[in-house]
Length: 69
Image (cartoon, rainbow, N blue to C red):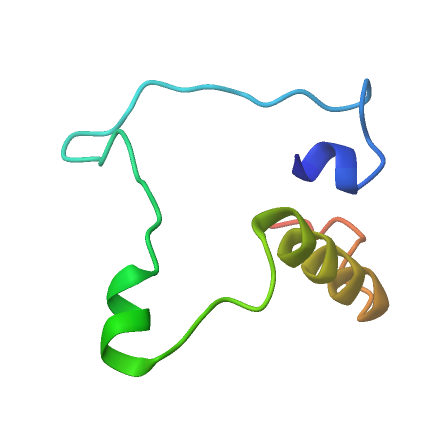
């Protein structure tokens, strides 16, 4: 989904590596506890939230690659 939102389909492919010891293999998001305790509901779905993040990231100039050498 992130590759699509960045307009990089066909240019980038995810790299899958073996899981590290102790790594959680599956996560499922559920906001029902936040709703029950805080009365909070998410204001956007995952795709809209990721799109907003990608737009923010581009606007602040972090799209260029940073070398760690």
